Length: 266
Ligand SMILES: Nc1ncnc2c1ncn2[C@@H]1O[C@H](COP(=O)(O)OP(=O)(O)OP(=O)(O)O)[C@@H](O)[C@H]1O
Ligand SMILES: Cc1ncc(CO)c(N)n1
Image 1 (tube, protein in one colour):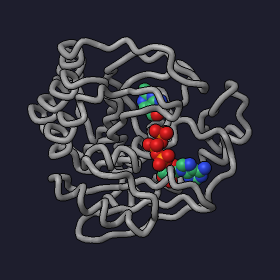
Image 2 (tube, rainbow, N blue to C red):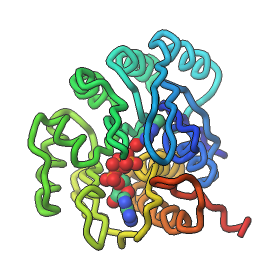
Image 3 (cartoon, rainbow, N blue to C red):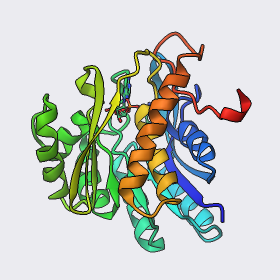
Image 4 (cartoon, helix red, strand yellow):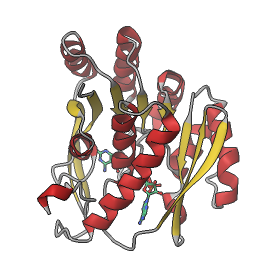
């Protein structure tokens, strides 16, 4: 049976991040992709020029219309923009008891532009974190959620992940992409085990949408795999392949997107 996977996120006309990246990732994993849009974002490889939010009531409308009809096997949540949208999504997650929820607590784009209002971070922490099965913060997002200093050492990542779990989150994938270095290291704290996930750093400026791709791949894979650790490991491998494939892309002047290649089109 083909699995149905939903993304709840903002858009990227350049196709590198947000809903567009998520849908490409779902297809690349043999799942059926669906999307509920929270914000239209005028952005490309060089940054964000404007955000047009969807009213929270219309996010609810999209979710109910979809969920009254379609079975959903896994969900990825990305950009939520403000506290009203967070509340709307939290309420529908509860109402429909959606399974396999991956929450990427998107706050700031690679370009430095905010994608979540600063005053909405507490709503994200209190209303959505407890309802997610896995959260995938980068290091600045982890610090914001904890109201703590951003860590700068891989050795401190397991303790930071454990602090996040104490906020009431089932599982944490703490992403270390912002640390630089020759390998890219993430830490998974899930189901009683802590593991480092390491991949060689791909030397490319085409890294727009890495976070979106990783969380979307994890949701798609969780719909198809028996446990979270397997899904996360395979998602991380997929992301490295998508970063390597991005070296061939000629999209935009800035941080180009990663590429969701299909081997059989080569
Ligand atoms: N050049 C790279 N080579 C290999 N892996 C990378 C590279 N850059 C980032 N990654 C991996 O990509 C994932 C996302 O990284 P990062 O910590 O930058 O998250 P993010 O800030 O949420 O991403 P985004 O900027 O897309 O929002 C992590 O698994 C990280 O280890
Ligand atoms: C819509 C959207 N979601 C997430 C990101 C992550 O950087 C982005 N740039 N745009």
